[in-house]
Image (tube, rainbow, N blue to C red; front, side):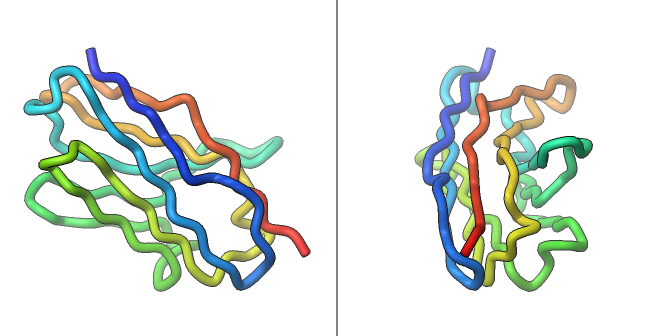
Length: 116
């Protein structure tokens, strides 16, 4: 079992920045991909960004050029730097990991609100 604890959410004005963190514990040596999804009210959960252990990254089209994912495997932590935030980025952001290429674990979610 892998436990994920997110932090860094909050409220920010349009154009502002936030940095999310997600620390994993339990079985971390078998984690391959670490990433972020988000879900806005009334919408489906969508992929925001992902990063494989080797460094390959992928981003959702709506965040390309604004968000940056990174990870520190020594700290078992994945980060999401969010710049140039827009009101449509408002959502609950969930950390997730692909464990042993077979299982997916989710964090509890952290709220990000972008509003003037």
